[in-house]
Image (tube, rainbow, N blue to C red; front, top):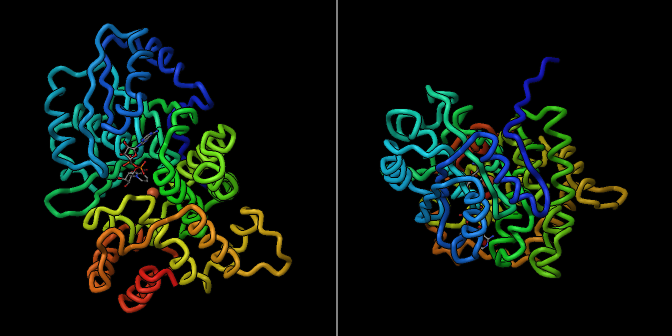
Length: 382
Ligand SMILES: NC(=O)c1ccc[n+]([C@@H]2O[C@H](COP(=O)([O-])OP(=O)(O)OC[C@H]3O[C@@H](n4cnc5c(N)ncnc54)[C@H](O)[C@@H]3O)[C@@H](O)[C@H]2O)c1
Ligand SMILES: [Fe+2]
């Protein structure tokens, strides 16, 4: 069998690795750096830390700190327009998936003509390679630090769209679990469920391979066995934070190759239209999409359970799904209704989800009626 596998940016990993940013900037002789981030990261004091390391090397540092959750195409365009004729030597994107995706998209527009709409949802459609982009995740997380995707909100259609390909990927990723220690419990829970969804969806998917399987199952083990510690028991435990962050990164590497499925297909419209945070939206769908997939993915779901550490002799897919629901309860994942989603919205949600790449890439495609049934179970958390 011939297998292609993308190993994406150069990665610096570990508690305290933020200081590597100085070497990264020194090696490319950067004098002028643009830091892109959001207000939460500024308030947490992380933006200042990043800028102080950048200043060891660069004589000019600029900051753009107006990124919104699920970044909008219009904000990307405004930032790119501001810096297009005064292009920095490097962009440093620090924050959760929203900030990293924003940095990727701005990098694309700094080195290419046109708009996000010109390149959306097409593989390798972006003509020019881009400049140095360092991603520094502060959630664990999206895995965006090393994927070749950027998810941007298209304000003209209220849809989340993807930029995809070599021009999108960061040149370096600095993955420092210390940056997640102050993450509030709700965001830790949500982003951890996003990472767990990446790990499971990239394993029970249409196009897995031996390498992605290894990464996915290791990620499942690290995330499932440490997330509750990070959210509830001991949020400043650096070993648990490191484990979940490693899991998130491995899951990102896996899904960049094996792709995702219907859980993300449902989560994207929940984010774009109802503004449900991405990780929470994935948590809503994960157990119920797995339930639907038991006939085709049952064996794989059992393997996921083994990776979670479930030791029951005659382990069934249903036991694995119950354990995931239990974790969701323990880390206080909210209900759909808490985000203003109404039962009568589920029909429209089904229509929107069926237009998503995640629906098309799923190992089995439910009919509209079946999808509405899945959504109804999600809604009441049956
Ligand atoms: N490109 C990819 O491969 C990929 C994969 C999955 C998800 N995504 C996208 O990523 C986005 C979601 O990213 P996210 O879940 O990381 O959330 P986010 O980036 O939207 O951040 C959520 C909130 O957490 C705050 N925050 C982040 N880190 C913090 C810290 N250490 N301390 C205090 N506050 C902190 C932020 O300020 C923000 O208010 C979505 O748009 C989703 O579609 C992209
Ligand atoms: Fe995700």
